[in-house]
Amino acid sequence: MKISLITATYNSADTIRDTLQCIQEQEYADVEHIIIDGGSTDETLKIVAEFPHVAKVISEKDQGIYDAMNKGIMASTGEVVGILNSDDVYAHPEVLSNIARVFSNVEVQACYANLQFVQRDDLNKVMRTWKAGPYSKKSFYYGWMPPHPTFFVRKHVYKKAGVFNLSLQSAADYELMLRVLLKHSIPATYINEVIIKMRVGGVSTASLKNRLRANSQDRMAWKINDLDPYFFTLYMKPLRKLGQFLKR
Image: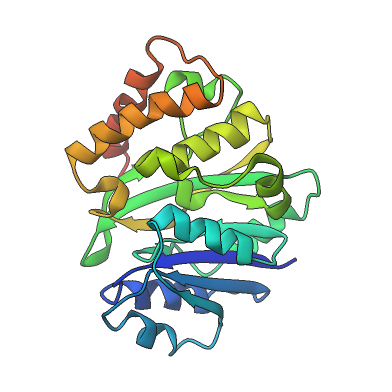
């Protein structure tokens, strides 16, 4: 079973080597790694060229990270698709083997796991842990969402439910998972282990202003899917993050 991994890059020379190396070191061999680059002007593409496991590189201007991810999904040929950001790494070499084992059950359509936020200059320094927990149809109504970098789905799920909605900006990942899991009722399997280390200071963790903007987009995510959150749902979503600081 081929697993397609999509990495969006743009002037990512400071971190992309770690991302590439963690995929190169995976025990699971049937991997298609696709790089979608936004037209980098630094050493990003030169570093990518050093890694022969990379299957495809598309470098051209785009409309941002979610547009790049959409291009990667469309270019992928694997049965299962995952996304690894250019400043993230897998927590250990068995991650993709474990993902493949989960999807060996033909009834599994999607899976997700836990994530650790780490210092940008020290991947072993854990700042907080996002323990996702099991999913039920009510989860989103209580402010829950899975860590998007840990989210793997079968390719046909994107064909059924669609890809990232660019109008949702930084909340596009939330809207996609809301649409896939809640609106389309795609079942998801929870893997109770940390599989991703994410550097703090990325697109989704950059500032309070960005978070506030994302929260307003969260409301739109429900509206465009004809879903009605509880009155407290969108307040619960950021509050749930407070517990992550207690789980180092």
